[in-house]
Image (tube, rainbow, N blue to C red; front, side):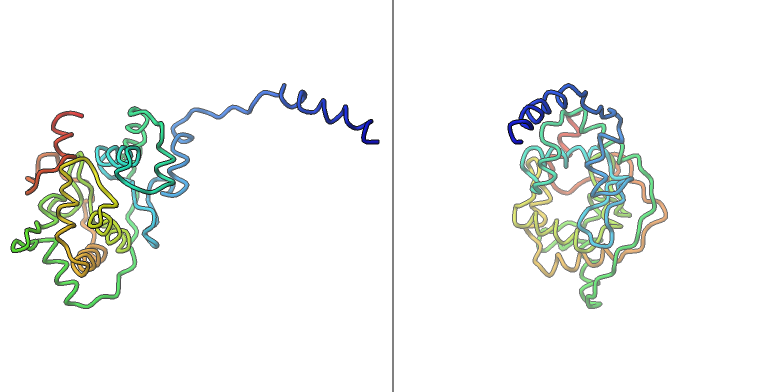
Length: 236
């Protein structure tokens, strides 16, 4: 019996190999499928858990820079590093501009359970900084309403507590970086763990402004030299 069946099995690969491979449509939706699986159809993220950040409405220049940082090993997260590996600059720009153009409502994140004193400290750091320790206010770079500044500075409002604290911690421990001079790493390095808790808690609980759009380019004067802003000024 086995001898009789052998020719049939041997012929099977030839039959299957002659079948044309199914075609995959080359559309933008197909191209961003790997992104929307985690970040949501419109880049709304996962506000409840804070694990996948919102992409919708973020400045395109900022999103391009993050994709480049994952490509170059400056920002670490294996699934993202794998996803963007080998993508050319035009492809990265296309992805960034798609999500930057998405306008979807912000979902409120859970409010962290912290003391009133912690929230007060967070508000102070965000709005005034701590000059004695060389910590500039978040508003100095991220805008008066903390909605970001075109084309390279992201908004901070509407982000979950866990995500904000994790990213500040990553900069503080140098597990997240960007092109030098890395002003965020410099600022985060001056924050204590309690400062990070305070800033993240206050930002996560802040009421959302009526206009969530990023401010116009050139509307802020950053207090520190930042490599990402130099790139933008150079047109790269």
